[in-house]
Length: 178
Image 1 (cartoon, rainbow, N blue to C red):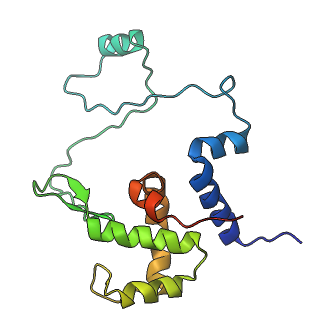
Image 2: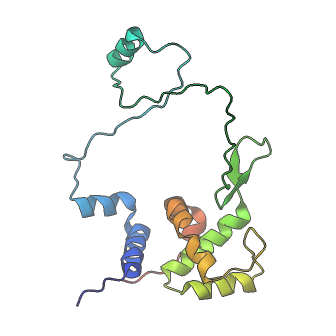
Image 3: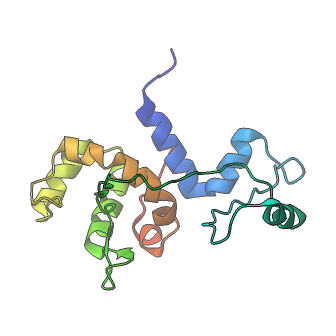
């Protein structure tokens, strides 16, 4: 009977990434070779400072570009736009210039610890207990629990490629056996 649980598949993929790197895993899974890889697509989002006209489109076309999307905007009189409040992604903080995001070393260490625990197949509750025992709290000052660690998964997936290629990971990565 085949195991349908997603956790072993995730751990298998993470383990393969650690040993072979993302390109090798992707090539093996897709059967991609140097000869049959698709060309890289370059995309450029441009805020127009001039009117969109035939001359601009012809110039871009001569340079190899093609329009794939147009975003239209207009000012609506009498209505005020609601400000967007987005949380700063975990592992980052607002920079001193208040314009950029910069790495938060403490949060990155916790993310590294969580990833290591996941790769070692430890339960989320155990990872949370160990974070709490070391005195780490969530951003809201609450203690970690299995649910808060679980909710970190999307962010961990987003940053994992960078972490797996970091010197910190190489120094602390567990020995994986599959």
